[in-house]
Image (cartoon, rainbow, N blue to C red; front, top):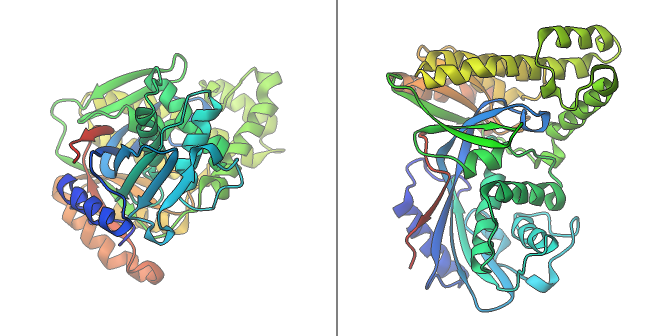
Length: 414
């Protein structure tokens, strides 16, 4: 079974796939429910979560579907249609491996969720059977966060655990990736999925940890959110340039903490402060200063982008999305060759309002905001040009046209 399903996969088809996987694995779905978790599309500020900026994005209709039920034992038993070669994952809740000792496979995620809940003092004694299937592209649309949230909410439900608040869920899901998987991710992905609402953007303000749902303004032209999957597979964030950028930003904060009184790069909100820091460290730490410059300029554009969204001015939203992409490429230096090829191709198509790499960087997917009338032209341009530029991925790339959806949904079970 392909790792990435057809873009036409819907809930009915996913249910049939789960039933087929149940027969293959021998894990019964009797009494199971389905929890569906979405992907996400960040409109700003990409890489802003660990730098203290405001965030804005939407949930998108590429999903992980998980059929789950209590199994009356103290074991987790799980089977993924995306990783059938791994077979049934069967682990005792009393014998969860410690961080760094779990198998280097998707099994780390359910193990990590169980480990984290137990570490936080929650009573995790009831086992769970689960069958999973997803069609989220690998890299750029937060497949790992979607998986972690789904597992976390489902295992907590099976064990009757009250996680108190949605922000507590965000923190726990981030902690699974930080403390068990070893990924230095921030909280952007978890927030944009957990709080996603159909037809609206999610605005997160870190100063008070508030969430605001922002409807798209009336009069917005019909447009598509498109994911341009390069066919490349990015390793986990812990093995990528993301980890280096995270460390560089922390190093820049350390340099500036005493002379300029900042605690995150997001604290650099004025051009005067930005210029003063560049004057102080530009020659001695040019790369770190470029990282700051991207965050500063993206943060300056953020309020304008948010206003444009509220007004339905998708042309301006797209232009800012494009400007952020150039900053990610040139100042943050987090993009990759295949990602930029996708951007270069679609940038030439009339009706493409903006494009840039998505997510952690290096590999994975780029994204674009496209007038609906231009969607077919984007597909044709990619189909013509991308395989010529990267023939090794000619059979693996994909173009996804997405819509805004709720992030977490419970569907009827069996």
